[in-house]
Amino acid sequence: MIAVICYDLRSPNKDYEPLFALIKNQGRWWHYLKSTWILETNKTLQQIIDEIEPLLADRDRIIAFEMSGDYYGVLPKRAWRWIERHIEEKQSS
Image 1: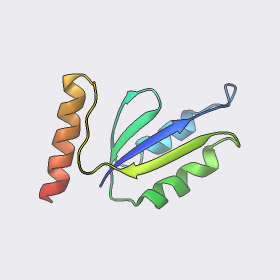
Image 2: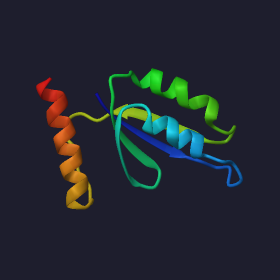
Image 3: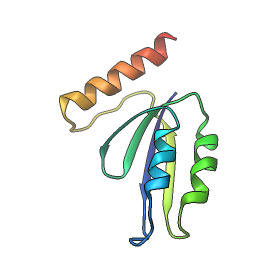
Image 4: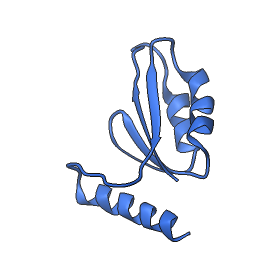
């Protein structure tokens, strides 16, 4: 699955490095937008969020969804190559 994680981290004094490390550990990842990660993973969305949630502060917000169907945006070519390569790999497996 190609999962998209978006968040709003609202605690400026909190160390979020453990959160970022955990996200990176979910599978192959891409992180070009400040509050968005795209993951190629075998985990479910619930598994991802269940692992991440304990590292969030009370006011933080997060959402995960599967990247499928149409998508469009303004990103550098290398970002689109990463997305297209990983979506094609998942579809062919």
